[in-house]
Image 1 (cartoon, rainbow, N blue to C red):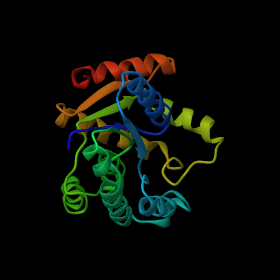
Image 2: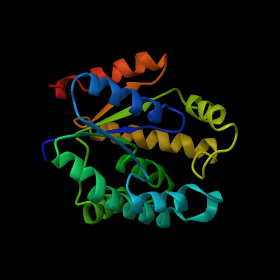
Image 3: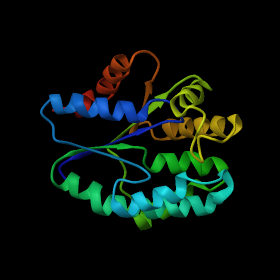
Image 4: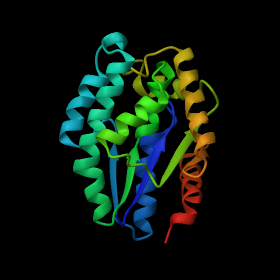
Length: 207
């Protein structure tokens, strides 16, 4: 594959969707061909599973069921969208990927090795070339998300502060363990400042 695969990760309200779009525009301005996608979703089958995962009561699915549904959605996404774009030489920017499953479902007691085994089977172990972990002070992202969603959150955003603290801690553990792939990016300040930091975190990969 001749393209590059970049994922953006982080907890609720850190600005992943906004920054994915802004980063795509910045890369396109450099003459790169960029495909923008998201998880769960990004392909027809995965978008159907997204509806099952994101809607309904918090307790609709157990953590084990969530992990299996995310793995199924990702398998279709990788096969139908991500790998073809990479093989066509595009840069793929994905708003969430495997590390979100590791943080959100792993934070509910699912063993990291089990999540990685599902990923090895369903998506043939495909990992991003670079993961950009957007960070905010604890609690700031959830406050942003409440304003953004006007108090109506999805099944994950609606969970309590203890859950979100564990998600943040899980992302930090991943970043510490996989520093060669994961770069922390401060998500405070203006959108323009955050995008500039993201570009800096990709500087060694840019042509």
